[in-house]
Image (cartoon, rainbow, N blue to C red; front, side, top):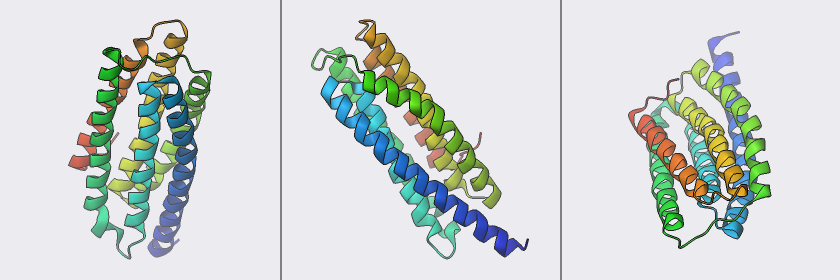
Length: 199
């Protein structure tokens, strides 16, 4: 296979993976934000907002690969991904503080638990495919986007633990899970800003 043909095939694969990521995250965000609002869960709202950040990140990679020379748009795409992470961290931290202060009291959510469990299964598979394609084509932004998808796996685990403990009556587990989500978002934002989407 010629280098040009291989490049075209990898670019097409990245576009398909971006489309799959956007589709899943639209569904995930809709459910998480609606349910999080219903039960006053800062962790579930944070999870839904992360889904919106992932949609924005995937759209940034799609925008990059729509160019004749995707490398010319890579730095801008990485900066956008980083800012998205930072914005998520700030919002979720504020929501968690409000929950701790008693302004919002989270209630149990079976829907949230099911959503977190599904994402825990789906997102690692999608992230691995994105990372492989990004590394093959040599795109740091595509690999950064795969990290954002992988982040959803960690967030799913944190959310699942927080919501499960909430079912046991441990209301504080929800804002603690939200702060965990914020901390991971900051770390990933710093990595994206530096253009260091390794590992």
